[in-house]
Length: 229
Image (cartoon, rainbow, N blue to C red; front, side, top):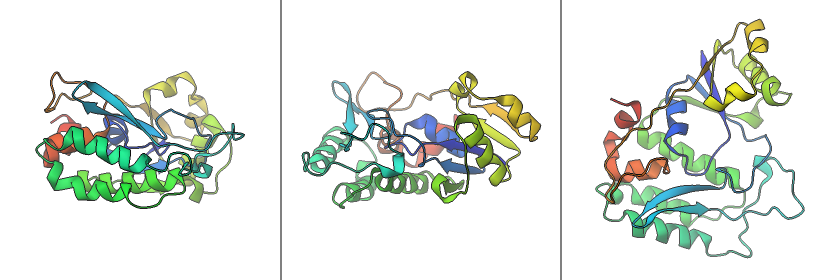
């Protein structure tokens, strides 16, 4: 049983999806601290001039410490953020081969009223998982009765779900207390992701965009490309 754990990012990049594909259970860790203007409330898409951020506005004033599942979207001072986001996506991807095939799925996220960031992110993640055809089981972290911080929290999740292998991101080498996992007979492996080069309508190729860049450009071939086949 291989398990991976990651915060629910917004329109996640390809490495996030590589991690999901390579495990049996993927835990969306929504009950850990939110990092403003990281990848939990923004991501990058390709444009004719390079790339641009799509950033979901959130309330952070007087909330320096809040969990991801507590973060509220700022629909007060930036009431048009959804229209702006969809207009940006449409303008930059309408000429891609698969935009028309998938546009209705994604446009729905920009007309529905969202209050919590986590609900928006998880809904998008489930939709993309379906598009890619990834069968990995997804578990929401806050649904688990787990405790601890950093390595201890990750280890508790692994134990709770019966993991025999924990798939960590490459930066896990900087903080994971691997000996604790060994004592519980859980093997730790680190993700090795080689970013594929695929067709982008705008040249030259720029890596590390949101997964929607791959989907709109390559459509049904997206998972095969992600696998490196």
